[in-house]
Each structure stands twice: as C-alpha cells, then as structure tokens.
Image (cartoon, rainbow, N blue to C red; front, side):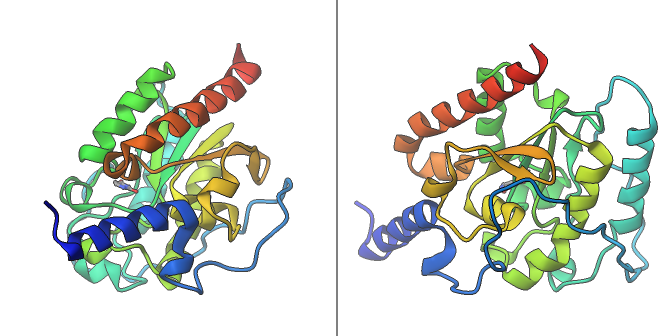
Length: 254
Ligand code: URA
C-alpha cells in the first residue's frame, strides 16, 4: 500500500490537473483575456547568449516536401537552440525544440520536456509520449503528420511545473513556431499548456469542451497524457475532447 506521503502527493497531482496551478502557485500567468479571436502575440526577437557547445542538427523533421516552412523552421532552431535566457538552460541536457511536419495543419502543445525528452532532444518520447501517439492514432492522425512542441523547451529539474518567469521567457519561441508552421488547429495538452497559451486563468475542466483561439487558430484543450497515466478515469473525457478536435478538423478538411 502507498505511504501517506505518496497518497498526498498523488492527490495533489490529481488536484493540480483538475484545478490548475492555483493550489501551487497563485501567480501563474498573466491576467485573463477574453475568449475571442485575437492577434498572435509579438514575435520572438530575442538575443540568444551563445555558448561554446556544438549545435546539433534539428531532430527529425518529417516533411513530405522541402519547402519554405521547413527551411524557416530549421533556421529558427539554429537561432535559438543554444538559449541560456533562463536558468533551465544551465540544467538541461538537450534543448527540445519540437518535432514533426513543418507544414502541419495540426499542432500539439505540451508543458515541457521530461527526462526522456531531455536526453533525446525530442518532445513526447517517454511513456506519456507513447500514450499521446496512441491517442493521435485513435483519431486517425499519424504522429509524423502533426507538429509537437512544448511551452518550455528545456526540462525543469525534477519535472516540476515551469515557473511563470520560465514560461514568459520561453513562450515567444512557441509563438514564432506557430507563426512559421501556421497550423489550422492546436490541441493544448494539460493545464500549463492551456493556461499559458490561451492566457486564461481557469481550471482545465472549465477550458475543455470549447473552441478557443490563439490568434485565428482554433484551439482545444484536453488532459495531459501524463495525467491520464496517473488517473485513467480521465481517459473517457480525453476521448471526448479528441473526438471533438477531430470533428473540427473534419469540418475544415473533409
Ligand atoms: N510532457 C510534456 O509536456 N512534454 C513532453 O515533451 C514530454 C512530457
């Protein structure tokens, strides 16, 4: 049987996923914005402090055609992959830029790299990632046809939630990726992704089951796959969310 301490930790993790970071951090993310179409926030025009490290090539970009987006994305990766703008730069092993199709119609956004991702430099490659791949397949998307990125590009030590400063520092990189890829639909995975990208200070429960907008891009919110591993009871709701997401896609492309 789990110890009392373990039970408390599990229960806090469950609450965090249901009610957001209120319990943990009262200051997470800026003031709420109206849930209506809005301009994408400004581009990331950041100066990256360079380090002597060797720049690795962009990990796995699956694209059916070499085109402008592919080139732009690869160039952007080179620009930011040595980022040391926040303390996570010092503790990371690899910078986890994003993976997938630079021409993707669908983009998935998670919270931040875990240990496996930090080791490989690719998002969602651990247990949660395997579940994510299955979720995608269940709604007839191949992992290679979408683009997957995170709110923060470097692993927070011990897999803690990234703090507001780390999020604020890193999120312009995601905005720029969105600007380059121009997805038509975004799926936010978990509270941190949803709260940070939508700038809504609401619980996951309140944000599910609705169409939000990032700029003009339709955006849907569901549970983080890691939360589903901890609490399989949420899989039913996640299934409803991703079917809703697929329906939006089919309405646009079927
Ligand atoms: N969890 C995330 O939010 N992102 C990853 O890349 C892996 C696990």
